[in-house]
Image: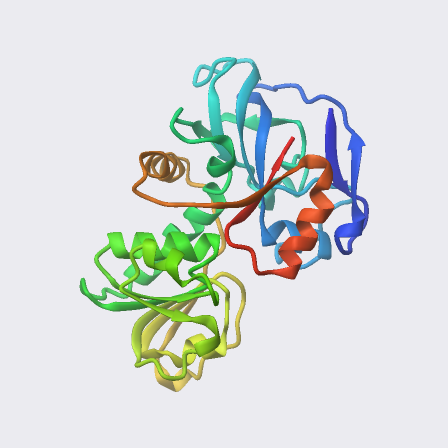
Length: 307
């Protein structure tokens, strides 16, 4: 099969399209014929060495989120049959890219996968697992602050995958959502249900104190300045410490795979109660170009590779 591997730590140029051994399904596994794999900033971070969870042995394959069809099943598997449509998240923090999703076929534990409804296409499905779970789990950290319904939450990066899902899920949770959109992308964020949208270029200095911030960019200090004393800031990457005297709780949200949560989120997207979007699809062989586009920024939606 064809796959994409990182042969060194560096920029997009370290990605190499190569032939890899066809995977075999072990006990409790299925082989997925990958129809779509999402390109995340985390994929780029893995190749540049910025992944915060320890060294990654070379070579490795990037890729967390896949959607496709079951090609074969291993011993003891009863959850899936050949031909089933599935979506899932390779827990890259455990596999370290062996396997990763940038391949035509992937051997995956059944616990990594959920059924994919026929109403959701492969490309859109591949944008869901990492982004939507991160958003849901980050909001769960905020909810432990016991803010009453109607409290205001600021979501930075609401144009992006995590921020977009966080905006929608916070609205579902009864919060008043103030969402920061990329310039020129305000209409999309309004579609997500935000009660108020502010452009990235406008900054956050004029905003009144909010109960909590989901800092999906993350911005760090500007986002912290917008939260009220004794509020909560949740960020998706480490950010500078907030002045202790303010009593602000500062949490770091790192993804963890939750099978039942993932199944529910995929169902919601398939039903249209949660929105996602794909900026463009590229062939698997153009993974390096996809990384260049992620680094350049300005995307309206996620890039998806189609093996």
